Every structure is written in C-alpha cells, then in structure tokens.
Image (cartoon, rainbow, N blue to C red; front, side, top):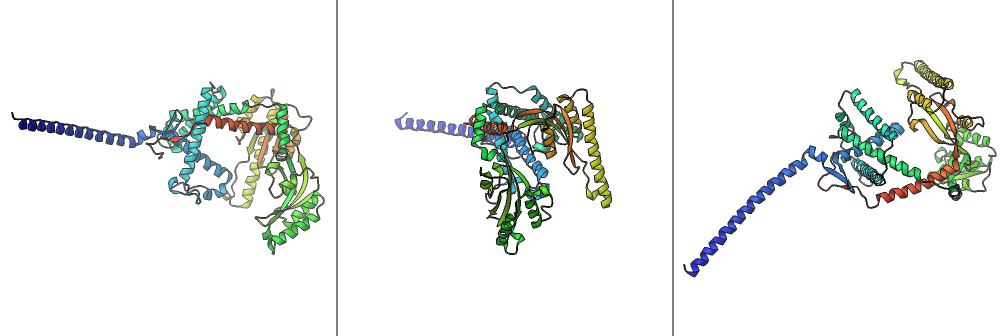
Length: 496
C-alpha cells in the first residue's frame, strides 16, 4: 500500500472513531436530559415538595410542611389577637381571607405583602426555636416532666377537637397549618417548641443578682421605674372656636383656679361632663417610662410636690393637658403571690331579644348567676378541710373563664394591678396564707375569686431584677444565634 493510501485509511478510521464518540455522547446526553426531566417532575410534585428541605438553621433542616406550621401559626396568632383586642376594627386591620396573601399589600410605603409579613415572622420563629433547641441539647438540658405532661395534654386536646368535628387528625391539622402535615409531624413540631421555650425560661430564671446590684440598678433608673399618681384632663382645640389659642387660654384659666384634687375634678367636668363624669376619670398612675412626653419631665422633677399644677402643650395636636401632681412611689413594698379564678357573666346580646325589658332582665339574670357562682366557690373554699394549691387547682379547672395567668398564678402581684379593694385586702396586716375572697369589677360582668399565698420580694427589687434579667437574657439569645441564620433552600420556593 502506498503512503498516500495508508494516510487515507488512517484518516477514515479516525473519522469513524470520532463519529462513534459523537453518537455515544449524544446517547449519554439524551439519557441525562431524560433524568433531569424526571427529577424536575419529581421535584415539582406536591408530595415531594412538602417533604423537601425548605429552611436550614445550622445543621437543622425544616421541610415545607415545617415552614407552613410556623407560617400559619404566625397568621393564626395575628388574627386571634386582632379579634381579641380590636374586634370592631378587625375588617380594616386584617387581610381579605378569601384572597391570596401574596396579592395583598400590607404596607403601601414599602410594598410589603401580607405573605411577606408572615413569612418573615415564620423565619424568625424558626431561627429562635432552632437556636434555643440546639443550645439546650448542647448543654444537656432535658424537658421537664411537667412540660412533657402539658405538651401531651395539648396534643390530646387537638385530637379531641378533630374528633368533635368528625374529621381525622391530619385533615384537621391541614386546615390550620397547611396541606401535608400529619399528627406525628405536628407533635414533633410542638415538642421542639416546648423544649426551646422551657430552655429559654430556664436560662432567664438562672440570672440572679445581689441586693447591692438590685439597689444600684433601681437608684440609677429611679425616674423611669417609680410610679407617679396624677390627675389630668385634656383640652382639644376642636372644642373652641379659636382653636388652639382658645384651648390654651381655657387650660391656663382652669389651672389658675385649681388648689385641690376636687378642684381639678370639677374643672374637668366643667370642660366635658360626659367624658369626665366619674371622679376617677381623671385619675392616672404611670411608671416614669409611660408618662406622656408633654409633661414627663415636669412630673419626674424631684422637687415636685402634692398639689403642683401644670399646663402641658401637645404641639402636634394643638391641645393642652392640665396636670395635678399627687404622689411619687418608689415601689418599696412587698409583692404578693396570689391564685386567681376569673369568671365572666354569660354573653347576652341585645339582638336576641324583642324588647329592652327582656334584654335587661336576661342581663340581670346573667349577672346574678355569676355572683352566685363566685359566692359558691368562696363557700366551698372556706369549708374545704385542706386549703392548698391542689384544692385551688380543682376549683380553677371547674370555673375559670380566663387563662391569662397559667394555672391562675399571679406570682408577683403589686398595687393597682386590679381594683383598690383587692389591694386593701391583699395588704391587710391580718392576711393569712390561703385566705380567700371574691371581688367584682364593679358592674357585675366579671368576678374574681382570689387566694392569698404569701408576700414576696419587694416590688422595687422585682422591677430591677426583671430589667437586669431581660438585658442579660437578650445578650444570651444574641450569643446562641451568633453565626446562625434561617436560610431558604435554593431549589424550593416556600409556596403554600
């Protein structure tokens, strides 16, 4: 074979090998495309997406289902709070529940949507829970038996709700926390939260301070911790033909004639007899940190004395406060440990009755029933052979209508927390452990059964300790979050 023929043969062989490699690569490429398509289909399937990692915090991973739990917890909590405290304004303060939260604007100034609000809250909750959970396990902390019992009771209550609604647990949970959640997933999530909550409580309670440290802190912050008792009323420019000038002249004229508390009460009633009809409508007690900026400096002045009068201008509103100084308290009295059962009269709606007389009669009957219930509790308590926490707990579970205080315990009761009559009873020198009494809100709509357990630390020390512990606790929380962030997984959106 000539040299030229040999070269041509080698060239043809090289081209054949090239074509074979190209064909092989084409086959491999096709296979890879099929694999990627299959993976994409799997990744976009709802079932897989819900189990996929949505958020990571350090080494902890949270699925889409987990994220939805925190998201809807934030949403449900917000809605419940609005209805509990601002029911008459709920429609203007809540998003349209029939529309996507992603399409509704929460803040016109920032363009933030309602979905972004609850997403941010969920991410913060995940970070807070995960950081405490990891720190607690690193420290060897274990969930207490009491908290475990409470956790199991919560889960049992949810199961009972599902049964009462004649639906299975998973479907019941899905309606509240998003699709895909199961009973096991829910239990694991509330267990994680319970553990993180108790570890945070454990750390906060671990901060202790000497009496010297408490005294020093209070002395340095006395102006904002002391409680100030004043009487005051507010004159609006809208009440005068010449606006702010008229309000100022009237305020100064009233102030010039005030020498006693009754003088101020009468002046306020003369200005507006409907707003200031009751004597106590002008009476106010504020900590130094809660005083209105218009007169806080004047009230906190150490030289201030009973009977001093001041006219303070609210320049923004064009209005004026007339202020009568009564007392400054340094809170140097003991707190009390109380157990309280709060009871409310049965709801009576005017719209359910044909006449005013029928409505009034039903309302009166509801109040009478409530009073009878409160008196029956007191009688049962007084006749009990043993008076202690266990005895109280039985009554609490049977009668309470309010769970604001866990198990009805007010660990640090202080003056003016409730009505003056309760203060007088609590701080009566004849008071003995486990004495009981009932108190009304004054109009018969609510009653309180109160048990006195004993006196505790001084209120000024409690305020100082709380402030110091809050500061140290915030520093601790910052430390356990150092280097941790709640990160969204890159391949999966947080679509609900």
